[in-house]
Length: 220
Image (cartoon, rainbow, N blue to C red; front, top):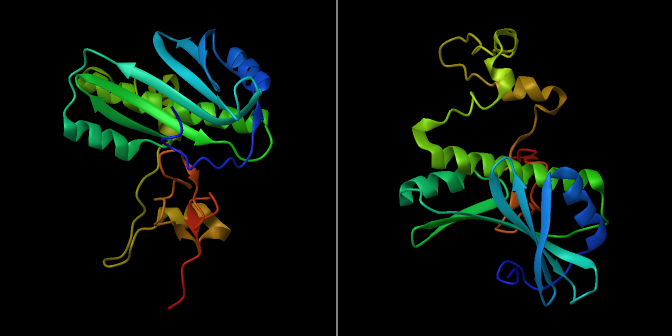
């Protein structure tokens, strides 16, 4: 399933047992759906949304996971090709694809380095973010991203979180990013990855920015 996304070269592996334990800690309902050779698939139910987490091992039964995949299928939704293209521009580690009348949200990541709970939590959070973006796109005008975020409905929170465009003289560029970066203001967004720090369908670390999303401007 994942070999379509990778070149077959493994950069590392994580223990399947630790990933499975982390999934069960992170989600309310996790079921083992089955195995197909080195591929082991878990089904997750989270707040009314179903998706699968697929773990590709280095070999059947090895317990060493070399790739992690996520898959959610949506049926009965009407979404144009243009809307799908718009969704893909806003996703971080995933891609959406129309297959007939079904919409698939998919992500595949190749393992690098040793297992770390915090790193895997970031992967799950990135998937959750993409899932949220996809659900918002599928809901269309019926759903508000702001309404789904409790803090955004609190008047005090909305007031404090307000950032107004700074006043500027005519012809002077407004650059809140440089002000926010402070000591790192000499950096700019990486053009190769668009500031995401990842490239490709399996979200490999961008080599141009080392995964930070920012680079030092080239001197001319």
